[in-house]
Image 1 (cartoon, rainbow, N blue to C red):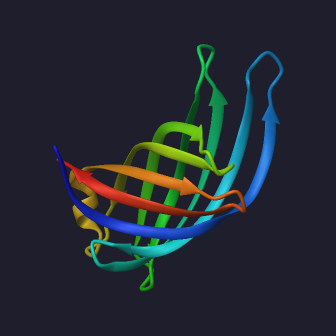
Image 2: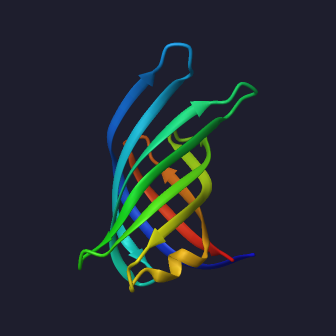
Image 3: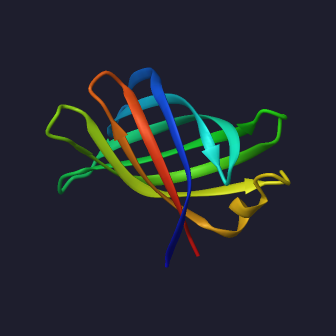
Length: 134
């Protein structure tokens, strides 16, 4: 069941690259950096994602990242979702993340799947909202 909203981040796409491996699909790689709060703790989130078009339509995205507090505590993140264009020329992403941490401030992340909604504006800025799913 989806629970409480646990955080919101805002940021910008800081890198964009088209990757193609011979015999494989083209992938759009994005690197993002954002700031905000999770469980009331101020954090910075840096992640890289890879988007691949699916044969029947739509785009699948997966990635990994690191969440850092101001005091240097960290949490590893793995996630995936579906990305689709919006009417304003931006993108929307819906999916789930899983965190692993030894951080006292972020320890609750070890026990939940985190579902998210990301709205990416045409200029590359975005908003990332997260809820716990227990």
